[in-house]
Length: 112
Length: 110
Image (cartoon, helix red, strand yellow):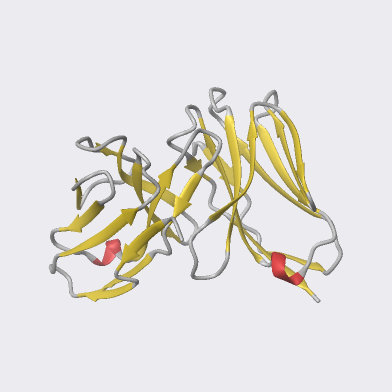
């Protein structure tokens, strides 16, 4: 099925460790987004990529970096994980205006 | 002030009830309005979309937008246990970058 694929689904990190969350879409969309979802905070935009080769900061970019590897793939990297980064991370890709986002199934990250 | 405000609930209703979910917003430039449904441990999925003001109906679901009051609503008629989920409102100026509400948790009791 066409959509957005995220890996891994679950991850536990120790404070200070690094990791990369992977996202791939097969819908030939230009834009891709990374959100984090926390209780009571809703979905908050971390970074987005409007097209291949471009990335921009969202609402909560501190502590994260991103790479738009090609049109299909958009990765999110935590260089030195902190407990405040414990969250559920969603990758999303919008189609035409009005079609909304297609979301991945999420990555549940715990930093201890 | 947050761009989008949404009452988190939780909301609990008996099966068959009419459910009303609401969001308010502060940016008058928003013109794309959406409702997403999110089941536990899943990603959000698009439920309803409305452009500018007005109503839109799809089966048991009706979305309303009142731009003059900066207020949007989602109504669910004849609610079913399968409607139990978190409902997120989202809105955008351009149709690309969306601002989300915090979500309202709904439980429909058989």
